[in-house]
Image 1 (cartoon, rainbow, N blue to C red):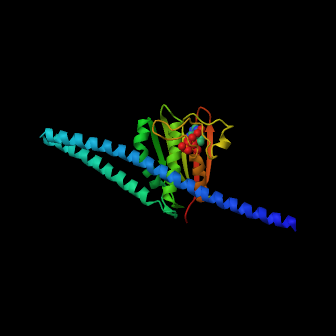
Image 2 (cartoon, helix red, strand yellow; image 1 turned 180 degrees about the vertical axis):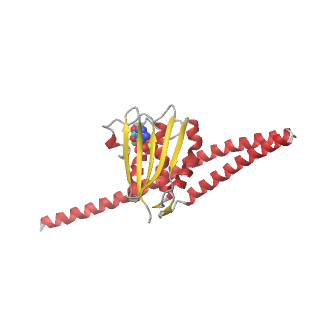
Image 3 (cartoon, rainbow, N blue to C red; image 1 turned 30 degrees about the horizontal axis):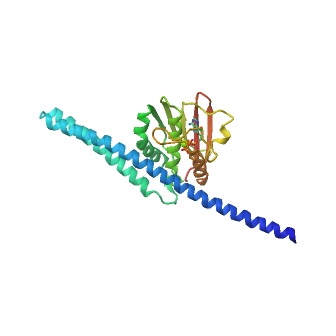
Length: 257
Ligand SMILES: Nc1ncnc2c1ncn2[C@@H]1O[C@H](COP(=O)(O)OP(=O)(O)OP(=O)(O)O)[C@@H](O)[C@H]1O
Ligand SMILES: [Mg+2]
């Protein structure tokens, strides 16, 4: 009888602990989202400043030179810059709106392109050249905002693994036999020693001393968040890495029929 009591008590405690973990996980995710919004705001402000500088300079040039050729060139540059500004705004608004928890049919290619647009400036600054190898793929059932956060973390990790710049290859493809959409992020950076690989998905595991000059990295939460988001999407995340050669993260998601 006593035994039975303690077992049910034990079960009750276990249940309570699991509930608390679920609540904490939800909170962690909210904090990560706020961090992402903060990063987005600062990236967007810089981006807009750059675009405004371009527009102002070409407007001045167009006013100074009356000849049709120079004016046409100036108008062309202004139009390009303004179009880019509009694209940035709509992407940021899309991200901000997409904070709802639900899943919806999502095109991984356009989602990845949005993320790349937002990180373009940062990648240029750190001399990281991004190569895209995108196939047309079926939609997946996803929360766009969460997948975007996963991509941002993988891309920032890759950038931080190449302090002197380098290549970053993104590939999106479809495996019809497994009915899985696959996305890989490959860098040619420092790599991860084999003995550390099993720990990189642990919460708070980091080898970075703190945030870098752009204020990113160092909490050790990025990959643990990636893993939990991918698993919530019934997907898989794996890593292949060779010390001194580079790292590849591969995500797989079930395709929508
Ligand atoms: N592409 C990569 N190349 C080399 N090492 C990596 C790469 N991605 C992750 N790592 C290693 O895994 C660790 C954990 O990564 P994770 O993204 O979880 O945390 P972080 O980048 O240190 O901090 P943050 O939570 O701010 O992203 C990193 O500190 C780094 O040692
Ligand atoms: Mg990280």
